[in-house]
Amino acid sequence: MIQSFVFNDGKLVASNLDSDALKLVRADKGLLIWVNLFSPTAEETKTILEDVFSFHPLAIEDCLSVSRYPKIEDYEDYLFLVMHAVAFNKEEHFRTTELDFFIGKSFLVTHHSEPLSMVTSTIERIQKNPVAITRGMDRLAHFLLDTMIDAYQPVLNDLTNEIRTLEDSVFIARHSEPTVIREFRERKKELSDLQQIVHPQRDVVNRMARGEFKLIRPVLLPYFRDLHGNLNRIDSTAATLSDQLYLTLDVFLNKASYETNEVIKILTLLTALTSPTLLIGTWYGMNLQMPEYRMPDAYLVAVIVDLVSTVGLVAWLRRKHWL
Image (tube, rainbow, N blue to C red; front, side):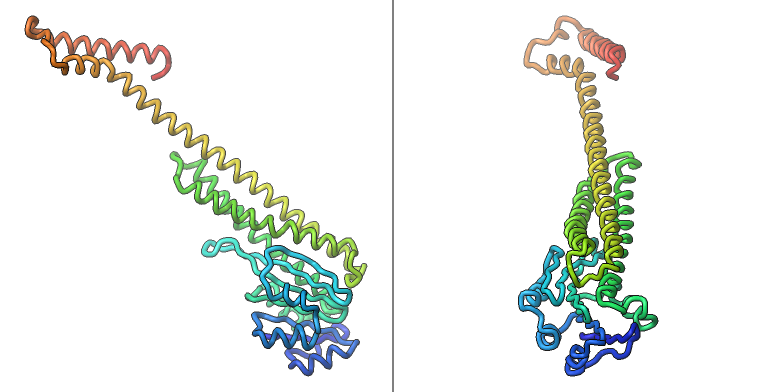
């Protein structure tokens, strides 16, 4: 699907034009245009990226292929930017959606294969009040990036809640749950994926904030620095959650080890307490001439010896504070 919006002096003057009209708009230097490609067909992609805007083949190739890492390339007349929006829910867990930008002086082309709330909200915003964000395509690109980064906070909140639930299962539960290791691995993978995305995105935004690219106007550099600061905060929070997760795992392993030692202690005590009975029973179970043939009260003596030995052993263990 192709969505297009044409602006003039901060006002929305046209939308959803065909390819021929888009070519005419491109030729008019006084107009600004945003084209959003949402899960486009191969023909739609070729029409917009090749015929209307004539982007570099390498940029088009990078746009159409799935990239795990953010990047930015300067093609003099435009910037090609790969970023990732994030989402998190209990059904699908952590996931990302690639969002590609072609940022020119008078145009912005975005491409994504899945619906993105940030794009939808931006479209609604420019249809109602486009003045604040459509006086420059770098400003519109910043608004999209800002909305995308703001969406990281709910993801962090969900991950925080998941880790707190995991902590409760470790600290509050009387016994260690065997599912903790599996949940730890899932949470660790989600945090690792988040950090792998945030790190390079932070570097990309930092390059834009430093004024490295001439297409980013100096007046917008403080806004991009603010984006960089937000990404730093997200990265720091993710690192803190990762440390907290490992601390929870250490507590779980220590608790599991303590419970195992308690079981071993009980079994050892049971073995020790039954040693007299086992010794006497073993002696009587041997194929030898037994004492009862010469002493009628031999069984009673054996029982008394067994009880005295057991009681004595219990008293000795208590004195040593082992029981």
